[in-house]
Image (cartoon, rainbow, N blue to C red; front, side):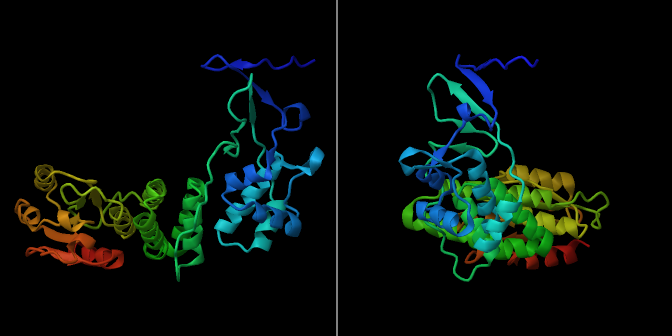
Length: 341
């Protein structure tokens, strides 16, 4: 005979118990409105999915109120993931109905406390609406629109899956130019008009950084005998574009050293003296950081160092000789590869 499970004590003194999903005494169900908030869609959308594709609540209570069980929500999340990846509604519904549903672990708090927590699907009945208004992406690819929807829904897993698929299919350059840049621009435009979306921008930045790091191979035997230093201009903190550049160069067998954001000028000069690089790439996102004096102040070494500057901050700035300006990810990778290899 199996002994019953005893509630486990939580740090705040409450008692938790793990409830089996099929135990009706511990079932956690949600209303249409709560599930709509969870998914960031309109309640009418859920009713349409129920009517057209059979993806509706399995529980009907008295008063004809419809309640979604954890399995129902999990299938809706599968459908939403498929939609984010570019599937049609019909195909996404077929996938959601056919795919195995991950079995969530339900944690029920005693006595009355916060809303029940579904840790498997990370669903919280008290969460605010996730979707909000969509991003303006005219002419963007279906994949870019999917990344935009996933970012607005604060679904980092979906964003990273979409980015990984894009990198695997089309490469880093196409992913950066055709997917990441349009979405970043749309989020920036949304913030300029409404003042909202900073958290979405930060989430997307972290997802892109993680995707680019994963796409960057380790170059054990670089083609260039001296490394390429990638750094931001002093005080410039926007270093995200240096990661796809590092990934592309590493794919081509070029060894790089990432120095990150806002590196002080004396530290940058020290790095140049210590590593004797074949090239230095300095990024400026904003014009106020595109300082020609900082470029001219780089130390001279015995061996020639090619200096490149990139980023929108240099568009109207003066690039001091012998530094060269590079425009765009593909051009920068080509020019740097030719210069150091």
